[in-house]
Length: 279
Image (cartoon, rainbow, N blue to C red; front, side, top):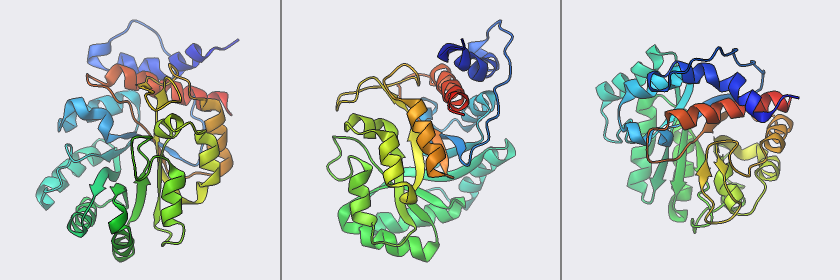
């Protein structure tokens, strides 16, 4: 019988072996390429410990064979000019990595909204992952139409008084332009006591982006852990991904204070293994 650990090894060990600090003496098989309608990516917050070390981020992403990323402002500062933006985006492009989005960007004023859309346009991305205040939602919608850039509003769990889970996001955007959508963070949804698979299926038509993580308990104080070490039902969630026809990016987000390399490699390996299990 093939176990979850076997799938993690199948998917992740070759990646671990190619990260200098994580050398192993194992002979690993390449992971199985399972065709899905969505991409696998990394949420930029994962690389908080690397700050703006783009070369290190690329090294790790190439090692784990993930080719999509959304960037945070510590990787691409909001005030970046065209030359600085082109340099950062160009490094990823040269490495075969697509910068598909920016965020999470917090938006409280119209000026911040203006800056966010100019920032996204300069970077050449077509989606902003955002956390807007209620008062600027209509202005965000106006700018989404003007720039033809999608906005994926991120849920941040029980502590978030505006958008704890994606049902609250949908309430605010359901009558808005179809470029106004949702970034489903399954860990925060789980901490709200909800089933991320059910939330995905219910609001699938407005979900543009996802942050994928595991959590040790479905309660407010639940902690993010390496995928497979928590209580998330990944098989159920992946079946919902297939049923929904989701075609955006599933960006893994591993939140911890130190070097994320090892935990991220295991999380990516686990997710790929679960994709195989759910086939």
